[in-house]
Length: 187
Image (cartoon, rainbow, N blue to C red; front, top):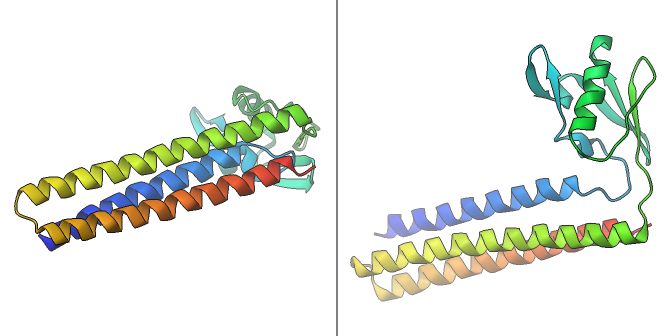
C-alpha cells in the first residue's frame, strides 16, 4: 500500500513539473521588448519537404537588445526562413540582406505592456488550474485507496504531502509570473 501511495505522489509531482515547464514555455513567447533568440523557438521552417524548427536550419542570435539575427546554414533557405517567421504569427517583419535575416523588435507601448502582463497572469492562472487538477486526481486516488484498506493516518499524511507539493508549485508559479511582469513593465 505504501508503495502505491508513493507512486501517486510521484505521479502528482510529475504532472506539476509538466505544468511548470509548460508555463515557462508559454512565458518565453510573451516578449518583453528585448530581443532574445528564444522568441523564435516556435518558428517552423519548411525544409526539404518537412517542417523543422528554425534552430535546425540556421543560427539564431542577437545583435543588440532590439535586433535578432538569423544566419542560415544554406543561403537558399533564406526565403523559407522569412516565410516561416511570417507564418508563425509572432508579429515580426523579417528583413533579408542576402546573407542573413534580421528582425527588429519594436519597443513596447505602455498599453501593450499592460496587455502582456494580463496575458502572463492568464497563463499563470492556467498553470495553477493544472496544478490543482493534479492535486485533485492524487487526492481522489488516495481516497479510493482508503476505501480499499489504506489506514486513515497514512491517507491524511499523503493528502498533507500532496497539499505541501501543491502549495510549493503554486508559490513558484506566482514568483515566475511576478518576475515576468517586472520584466515586461521595465522600460
